[in-house]
Amino acid sequence: MKKEKINVALVGLGGHGVTIRNAIKMCTKLNVTACYDINKELIDETKAEFNCDGFLNYEELLEKSISNAVIISTPNFLHFEQAWKALQFGKDVFVEKPITVKVEEAEKILKLAQEKNLIVQVGHNTRKRKVFRKAKEIIETGLIGKIIFVESNISMSTGLAEFPEWKKNKDKCPLLPMTQLGIHFIDTLIYLFGDIKEVSSFARNAYLDVEDSVVTLLKFSNGIIGTLSSSYVAPNVYEMKIYGTEGVIKCYLNKIEVQKTTEINPNVYLFDEDIESYVEELCEFAECIINRIKPEVDAEIGLKNLKVVEAIIESYITKKAVKV
Ligand SMILES: NC(=O)c1ccc[n+]([C@@H]2O[C@H](COP(=O)([O-])OP(=O)(O)OC[C@H]3O[C@@H](n4cnc5c(N)ncnc54)[C@H](O)[C@@H]3O)[C@@H](O)[C@H]2O)c1
Image (cartoon, rainbow, N blue to C red; front, side, top):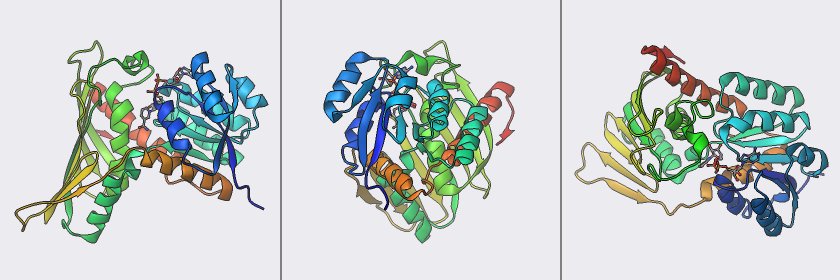
């Protein structure tokens, strides 16, 4: 008989880990049995929240906890080692985006997961947001005709307000906003329009000592062209504009405007969305473990998204267009 509930361990409990903790309470098939962080206060808080075991040492959690799976929401540069170790211990893995910092690391994770027949799901929740599910549906009805080009910009919700130091460190988070934020839209653009085959990028240090603003031109395999911008400087920009032969779709965080060329006013769809996309991806993780099926965003897709980021970085460094 199939298991009804999956025992999971939470790895990384603060920052985005708080969203994960809130979302997981709505997944009836996940049972938090253990947690790990380097911050003791967060461990105590999470232990009380889920009545679970707490660990200050990752290897000890992997050895001693009764969890079948881990949910990793730590800084990006820790993903590879933590996911790798969990797979070695025979645990299924949910890891936040990006899957790892380097393509070669993601390739190793994919290979190990395949060898061990384990699930790796990557936390690209953006494509699961109601606006992008709706945008895909509208595009597929042909309402705005053939898609010609797309403009997109995803920038830090808090602008230059305080955020963790690792997000400003080029080794830990290469081409900073593009790795940290832009990758959300890279996944979503590929979900909507198929593979990206070529990129050409510019970046600048507007306020920080490192690149805080990146603009990239994109060419998709099916001929669509587009732009993706991402910045730590301009606060709270979240928009994707999709131009077709018969109209335009403008996507924002909780709103879509659909404007047919023949109509004066756009149709506006409003979505009341909070943590639903996170709940959906975590519930999906449970189903994938129970039924041993591939998640919508698996290691292969996580790797594909990261390859686009690496091409963007190479293009910026070499000042040339780069094929993905
Ligand atoms: N899907 C999304 O919408 C979304 C949003 C924000 C962040 N993220 C991702 O979540 C991850 C965490 O980002 P964040 O902003 O929460 O970072 P953060 O720096 O706030 O760290 C998160 C947690 O990891 C813990 N941590 C740090 N080093 C650790 C270690 N060695 N072992 C165990 N725990 C450790 C910290 O104490 C903290 O509790 C990143 O991969 C980021 O890309 C995803």
